[in-house]
Image 1 (cartoon, one colour):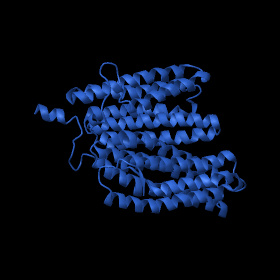
Image 2: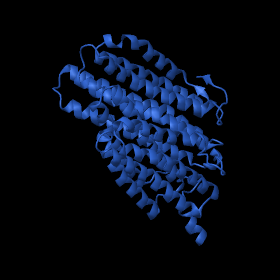
Image 3: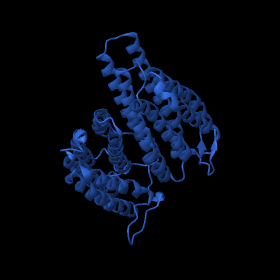
Image 4: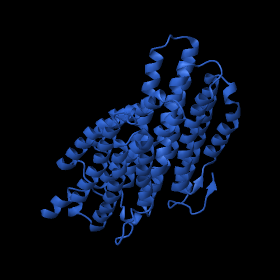
Length: 404
């Protein structure tokens, strides 16, 4: 009876429900709908090079705090009351963190830093405590993670206290610690680094959770497009801009879920080392995918506001850059998971690069329509490549890169 009680604290492995996402996880994700909205609005209010750098740092932070929680819930059973309570506390901290994003480099910096650090450190400390009933190797791994997050937290809080001239630098060090940590196996003196073989993740759960975050980001884009279109006079130009924005979002959805997610789910579920795939393909490359969606949402809002005339350089950069980041993230994901460099993504990135020198000569509506057409081609072409990969390519990823 005692053994059954202990097992109940941890997510089951290998049965049909082991990868199922619970309702509390979906409820938890609502905080990040708010966070993504705050990120896009932050950039619109700080639409310059400095704002872009700050947006990159904040997006990296929001993604990292979410994906680390996904790793934790990949092991802990979200149906147990203590785990549910942990997620609810994290939601409260996440709301404070998200609400402070617009003024994170101003008067609310300390609130962002403290809530973010408590989120990271509190969740990991709770996991260490819970794992006293589980695998010693896994518990030691989370002790390593806790040490790294305490180190990064010191820089977050120092940056929150410091004035603006120091804040960006201190927070950049903090985020660097968090992103370098997994690639180094959270190395610590005496106990060394962990192996990805210890990170016995449930691949289908990891794949589904990351897919749900992509839905969150795309959903925010749909909300912004609909809200801004509703405030416009419904002229042919406005309706054309609305249609192009919507089609671009649909193409992004199609690319991810009909090509990337399907392929990724197939490969991670059958991988000999799912921890390595989860770390490299999901933890890192999905950041680029999410960042691309956020920039594309900003581009859609700019398109609806000013569809005609010549595109300003920074507007053109966001329109092309958002889609390029999105495609690059998906390309890297496919490369890591399958060993293949998918031709649709390579061709699409070259097409965006080719039009870049002439982008300021085009009206925003024409430029956005071109980008949407490129995404549309990838969505159909990529789906055919994915079907072929999942059917023909051996289940364990190729060691050498090729194109398909």
